[in-house]
Image (cartoon, rainbow, N blue to C red):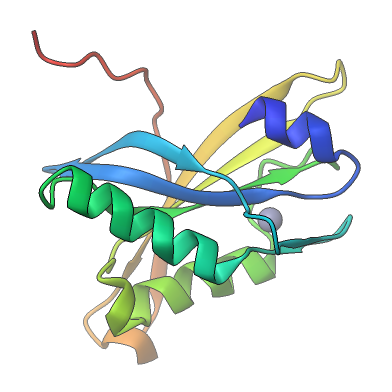
Length: 150
Ligand SMILES: [Zn+2]
C-alpha cells in the first residue's frame, strides 16, 4: 500500500481489501490496487470498478470461497488519518449495498506523515438497527500483523 501511495503522491490512490472474518477480527490477506482505469486526484479517487470486481471473483474462486471482499483502502497524501465526510458516506454505501455482502466494511487509510512515511489506520463501520436508513457507528480498529496458523 505504501509503495502505491508513494507512487501516486500527491494524488490519492487506493483499492480494496480481501480476506476473511474471524469473529470480530478482519483478516486482510490480499490488497488490490485501484486498477488501470482508475481516476486519481489530490482530493479523491475513483477505482476501476470492473478490475476490482474481477479481482474479488478470482480470489473467491481460487480460495473456494474463503477469501471475500472486506472493504476499501486509500491514501491521504495530506496526512489526515481521520475519515472525511465522503469516506463516511463510502462506508455507509458499502454497508448498505446488498450486492457487496459486506454489512461491516473496513476502511484502511494510509496517511502520509511529516517525514514522508505512510501510516496505516483502520476503521470499521456498522449500520444500526434501522439498516441503511439508520445511524452508522464508525470505530477505529487495532491493526496487527497476521500470523498464519502453523
Ligand atoms: Zn479519504
